[in-house]
Length: 102
Image (cartoon, rainbow, N blue to C red; front, side, top):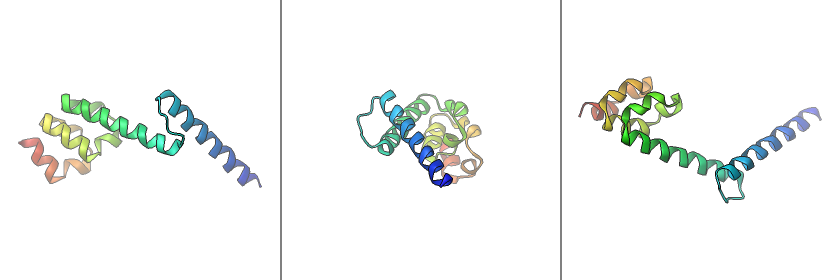
């Protein structure tokens, strides 16, 4: 019984958090999980635009974004030195390294 009640409280808390995200981001979707995906897509577009302007901005991004193939590829195409700030896995990726040296 306790476990079910706890799960219910956690789930309600997540719904409340997602609903507040929707309101703060001006999203009209009534589905909080869809709204979360919209926020993530919006973040991706903003970060992509940032590294298109300055590849070295990769330095200030979270490890999650430093491990994102599209973000890192865009960053190193803009400035090959951005490779220094890519995740270890992407530093060893042939296509990323090739883009950084071209």
